[in-house]
Image (cartoon, rainbow, N blue to C red; front, side, top):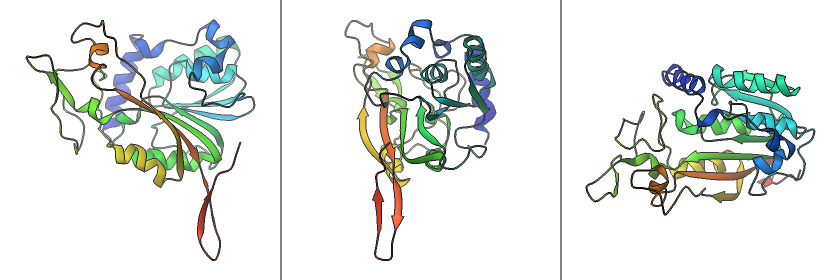
Length: 266
């Protein structure tokens, strides 16, 4: 797992430099945490008492909001520097947040069928094997549990540069193997990190194959008609950089005749 030390170091640097990913939850957000967490209405009306896994989401934002809403929170991240922000904010606010430093594809320290909600920001691009992540998420989720995840789209990761007409060039093959090479266009890439392209059949089909049903899918808009050429919001006019997926964990029951998948409501 040679990507682990590289990506840990990259995210530790981002935390130390207080990048945009290290903006901790504000007092205003903590007064209405579910509103801050969920502009799409995907979460239940209350998460009080629920077991929530904030997956690969260190930085003092998501975990703090869920804990402020009354959930029992575990936050997992590869970067100890990002997790320090969660720990500091939880202590400052008097919140109880469990901290676990590990890669998102290795949740072996967590119990089977334990979490009601798994919420994961953009992060699967930093692991080579997406199936391993989905397998672990499926294992630690209760039947009927909610899995909210966000990913970088494959087309966005294929863009390498702009041509002389300022058109964005898809310069990497769709069936890319191994870490992505560096390109001139770094709009949606993190400096120093190893990233991997996951295809749509892996992003969406992989969820279904692990016993999830997809209830919604959105492409967050990052387009701005007034953005100058080369700005990340100018590129967002042509290629959606992210996809958000709402998925529900099914329970499989088998009898002598056949096997069926049953949805278990909250």
